[in-house]
Structure formats: structure tokens, C-alpha cells
Amino acid sequence: MTGTTEEQQEPTATAEPDRRVRRRAVMAGAAAATALVSGAAGAVGGRLTADPGPRMSSAPAAGARFANKVVLITGATSGIGRAAAIAFAAEGASVGFCGRREQLGRQVEQQIRVAGHDATYVRADVRVEDQVVRFVNAIVARYGRLDVVFSNAGIHHIKPVHEITTANWDDVQNTNVRGAYFTLKHSIPHLLEDGGNVVLTASINSLAVRPGFSAYGASKHALIGLMQAAALDYGAHGIRVNAVLPGLTDTEMARKASGTESLPDSVYRAGIAAVARSRAPAAGRVGKPEEIAALVVDIASDRYPFMTGSAQVIDGGASASLP
Image 1: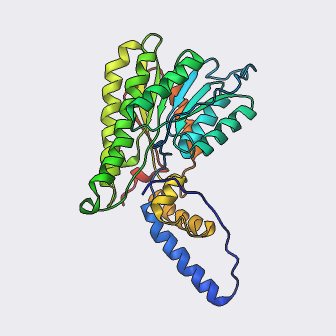
Image 2: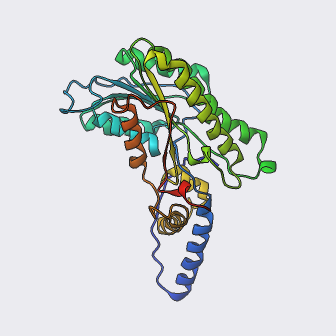
Image 3: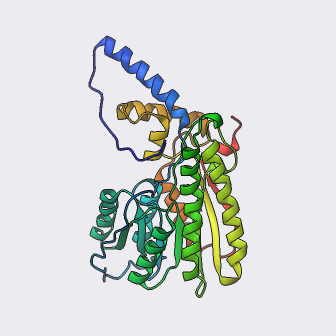
């Protein structure tokens, strides 16, 4: 399953039989929500297009950490990627981002521009190397440089090993691992001269997995290896490479994974809250995309010049507790 669904509707039933139905639905929602994992918007499929739009000429806010810097993001039409695009732009960055859902991409682009910031959306499939090349080149051509790369695009299929089809397996690895590899391969050359920062979205599934997460867990483990190797390869060039490892995060991808996309929003909320209390007892709640994005922005800033090759967990204490 991939995380690309929309939400939501409210229940209206009040009679006793309907309350019993609702209670059963809540229980079903909570059970289904046990499959929830951290979400990252998938940037897969489709043609590559870019709308240059107006260049923003307004000066960034005083103290903006990314003033006059260019940030490239994959998988930013929703979820963590979208939140990161908005957050980087608010900090003064010119943001170039991709994702496969053009309508959502244009909406994010417009939201950032209306706020007085600069963003360029490109529709691209991170599984296709030529499209990644054209995406990176389009952003460099528009802004003249790169300073930060946030490789975030990801999907998952949740099934036991023997039920995962070869197509399912390849889809996850090609998006999550090859997509990140293509992104780094073609963006890092633009960082070599002046240095910069690279952040990858991994997962607490990079540390340990749950049943059914073979394809996703394998891909996220691989991203840690890619991140560490890149940190060693490019440290001498002033390039820092790190990863964030989100836990249960309230994204479209998580809702799709839980199988609750057809249930009322209140049922989904009840289910995810119950799972969060169990899985992240320290925080007792699910994470927000904006919280993950805030960590990404902080890591990508100049605040931590000694941090590279690291995996930063942000999971509400989930990995600190026994199952």
C-alpha cells in the first residue's frame, strides 16, 4: 500500500444501533491503525513539468537561517516533505521540490508564494534517473546553486514476506533506496565546491521492524548505510549528511497503511490515538509532520557543524520502550 489518499468525513449517527456500529468501527480502526508507520509523501510516477512562476524579490525576515540559500526536496506534495518545504521557505530559503501529484504540488507552491516566499514545483518520478536529473538541473538553472538536499520521497507495501510480490518489493526499493541514491548522485556535485547539507528521511524501522514491514524495513535500513557512506565520502568537501528517523506520524501515508482511509475521520483519530498511547508511551500521542520538519530544518542549518553521519530519532519515545 502507498500513502496517497485524502481524508475526511464526520459521523452523524445518534441512535443506539448506530452507537454500536460506531463502537465496532472504532475498534476496527484501532486494530487497523496498528499498521501505521511514519509517513513520507511518495514522489513517484508522471511526466516532469515545472512552472517557473515569479521570482520572489522580497527580502527574507531578519534572522532567517536560510536566507539566500536553495533547498531541494523530494516527495513534498504532502506529509513531512510538504511541511519541510513550507518551513524552509519561512526561514528564507528558495525551495525547489518534486512529487508526483501535480495538483497538490501546485497548491504547496502557491501556498509558499502567497506567503511571500519562493518555491518551484517540478513533477518528477524519483525512480526514473532521467527525471531526477532534469529535476535537479531545473532547480539549479532557476536558482543558480544548491545548499541543502532533503531526500524524503518514500512509499511502503505492508505484507508478510511470502505475500510481498516482486513488483511490490521492487516498487519500495526503487522509490525509497534508488530514489534517494539518484537524488544524492545528481545533487551532491552541486554541493562540492561550497559545501552544504544533506538530510534523508529514514524511519524507526531503520532500527527495528514490525511484522509485515519487510520491504519497508529493508529499504529504511539501506538508507542508513547510504547516509553513512555519503557522510564519509563528502566530509572533506564540507558536506554534512544525516538522517531523521521518525516514529508514528500523522500523514496520508500512515492513514493509507492503516487501512482506515474509508472510515470517518473521527474513527481514524480514535484509532491512531490508541496506537500512539501504546507505541509512544512517553509522548502519548502521534507525531506531527511539522515536528519532523522542524528537526530536518534544524539539522540542515549551520547550528551543528560537528554533526554528520548521524541518525536522529524523533519518535515520541517509541524506540525507548519495549513492545
